[in-house]
Image (cartoon, rainbow, N blue to C red):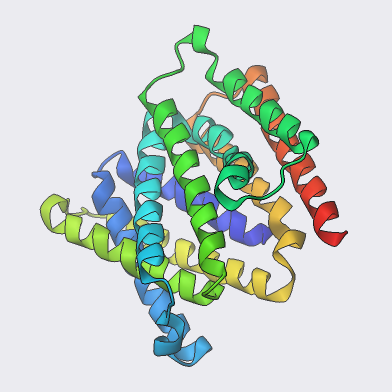
Length: 278
């Protein structure tokens, strides 16, 4: 799980680098093309049946999930280009708390007062990072917030999908639907990579696919609840790439905001885990 988070952080860094020179659709579509190849390979050689992997009892829901994930990926890259990896991931790390807040009205799940306090503390962390008086509420921040909300909705829909389909089926539809949508758009917005950028495009695809493979292996080895807290390491790894390679801003205010968001997320997760065990 830790190495998977490193892979996804590197993927974000490469996506930002490429999106600074090419349009976002080209970057996301090429990444998705390799993602589709990986999923088809995994389904055929690991699962043993693409038909079984693709079999779903709720195709409309899976299609919506795939489209939302593709849109979220596009907004995320646009945000990193405008505001950097540190700013984006600091805000994006709040999406588990948004899932928690949405789970009450949408999933009819009980959210305790302690969890609501955690949600509020996490959102205060987002406000710390945005610092409205510092003119940081710009298009990049709005895109980061939008990506976090979309990721939360994607998470909620994944929970709905898990009632009828297994995780491999959801992975298949997320890749093929989102990839098909982006490849369709690529016909109209293709920006041909030049020179060494083909290498970086290839590296982006390989790192992303390897990250998904490691994530699948991690989830198949232990329960999701055991490794979920490690997902916050992506914030650390991606921010480090932003600081050292892109000279992103990182100061005490951002650190406090990140600490509030991650701390609130971990506390909420601990409370949820205790309730589940009981």
